[in-house]
Image 1: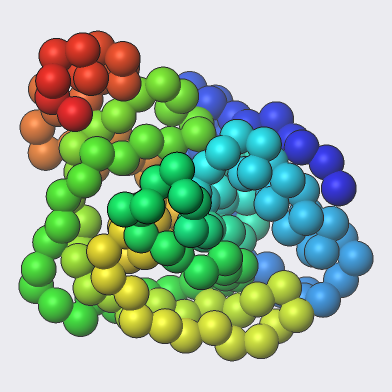
Image 2: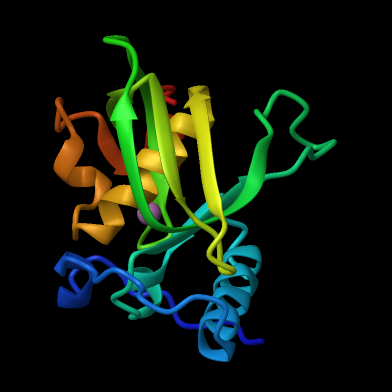
Length: 174
Ligand code: NI
């Protein structure tokens, strides 16, 4: 178990397309996923993709537990998804101010599919299949993008809705 260094935008590894995992329930895979959870917790993140710690494998984790400090935050189940896929189940889109541990201290307004169905495998090779909406759908799509080398600033419709969190907050934009 270890907190790993999180790559930041500009590192070319974040732009690679990650490879599918072929072997499940191995000591190496369990160790990598433990490291990902330690790293996400240490950074107080809601999700993390393996390429963000330099492992170019199609693995993501995410989850938000109920926190009394943020009673309005949507709870998202703690999830490990390996070799994920998804489909869109509604035309609706949902915009939100996204952040990313690889783009620290910044936020950008991004629209994503509001309702999706996703599937993948956990670290033991068990199928995980769910419908998701709201923040759950957003965090899945954000992490999925990392597996294809896409970062949220690539998804901005309006490039003026992007900047440092502190400046955006001081201006009352967020
Ligand atoms: Ni991210």
